Image (cartoon, rainbow, N blue to C red; front, side, top):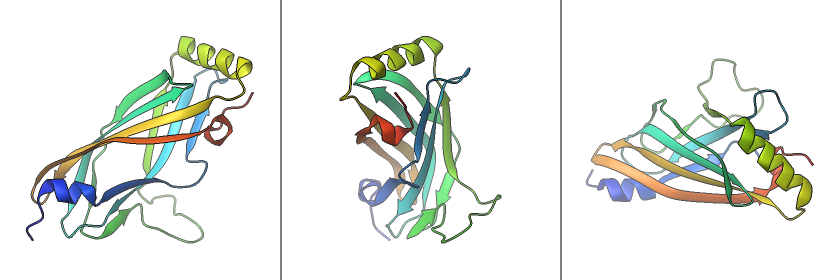
Length: 154
């Protein structure tokens, strides 16, 4: 197996578990953002994700950013968590990130959502880790969606 780490990272993908995988709660007493993801390794090398960097913006203004330091090991040509049809088991390993949002940032985002109808949510992910042939990083994975798709209500 002679794939360099850069080529392995080109074959590592991150996807949302469902259309509601990003859930931002601005109204609760403890505002937070929750994210459910799936890693897909389409390379002939194992991959270990060591850190996931998450940045979430509303209307291009930072809402929250943080790191998930849980390690996930993906064997060659594998998916984490596995794709299942029907019930996901309670003990199945999931890629879940929860980030607390500062009260002031949540209040600002609520005000912006109330005033502007065309706002969207921007999500930027960066994955850091190692693989069978060295260190890997996949940066600036960017997504944009309407605020309603992120669970934000007006």
